[in-house]
Structure formats: C-alpha cells, structure tokens
Image (tube, rainbow, N blue to C red; front, top):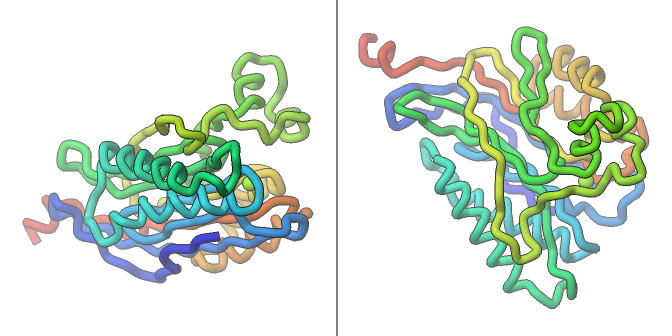
Length: 267
Ligand code: MG
C-alpha cells in the first residue's frame, strides 16, 4: 500500500486562467478483514486524486498500484493537468512495472481511477478517468451519480441486458476486469470532463467499498457527514462492518468554493 498525500481541511488552488478553487479532502485505506496485505494505493494531492487497486498476488499487485500513484504524484503542485500528461504518467507506470519483472512471471497490473484539476478552453474542470472497476461518484444537490463505467465482465453483461445491476454484484465473475494498467499493454483510460461546482462532493474508491455498500448506502453516509474526514471514516466503518472482504480505499473531495477568473479580475 502506497499512500501519497494526506487530508486537507482547506486548500486553495489558483488555476492558470486565474480561477480559484477551494478544496477539502480526506483519504483512507484499510486492508479489510479477509486479505493479508493491502494492494490498494492512492494519491491525494492537487491536481490529482486517484485510487489504484493492484492485482497479481502479494508483491505484484502492491508494486503495480504503487507505480501508478507514484507516477501520478509527480504532477503534485501543478495548477492544472491534461489528458496527455495523465496518459504519459500511466505509460511510464507500465514501464516501471516492466522493470519490476520477476515479482511475478505473469507481470502485474492495477486498476486506476480518479479526478484531476484541468482547464478546457480556459474553463476549470474536473477530468474524470478510469481503467478497471474502481469508481468515481459525484454527489451534488443530494443526488449521487456514478461518473465512471466499470471495465468488467459483469458491466458488459449488464450493458447487454443479460443480467441486472443487482445480479452483477453476486455474479461468479464479479471480480473479472476487462481493462487494466499493466501486463505490458498500452493503458487506455476513459475520460470525461465535468464542471467544478461549489458544494459538489466527489468520491474516488476501490471495489472494496462498492462491493460492501450499495449506492443507497454510499449516498447515505456522504449526505450525513458534512466534513470529508467524517465521511471517509463513516464509509470505511460501514464497509468493514459489512464484511470488509477486500482492501478498502477511498478519497472524498469537496469543492468548498470556486471563483471564476472574470470575478477575480473584476474584484
Ligand atoms: Mg479490490
């Protein structure tokens, strides 16, 4: 388990356009009750908040998730980042995993998902990215929405109408992902950009959370804990209380305020 960055109750970021964003965030990771080691990793420092869930046996999964968050963390302190930089970090992480060959014969791999502060045509935005079945959710106005689409066998079955969303969670192939970072392949993230809005809350998490809590449960704990640190604590306790069958890792990011550059200039 590699942990880069900590929580921060209030942090101001000035974007290249002059837009100011005030964030609060908290991150936690736990081995859970069943696994011997924690193969999840995270980076929680602007401009990147990301979770990686490694796979491939003890050292291999840990090595893979560490490689990804370590490369992403190299952007720490930058005001904004774009998809070319994220792509490059993931490619370098795959190279790093290759240099660790011998950890396992089959190579190693990891999921990755997260949000990054970026600007599109001068407008501040969150870049949401994912490979695998770790997820990003957005809570705004009391509405919880999953922003990422899993790269998994069961997601494909759901999309094809062959099983329901509820059946997916208990399906025998519930843990089989169809895309990963690693295994000597070029990483292929899905990207989407969303507006940065005051009062919005983002949850970045590994499947150790979403396999233990329904979206209803996740929404409940996000709504009933206004501070990000309380929210991560409550969600972790709930996941462990429901079994803690996998490593549980999450980051909660709150947008406390955003002042667009026009307002900054006219102030
Ligand atoms: Mg997992």
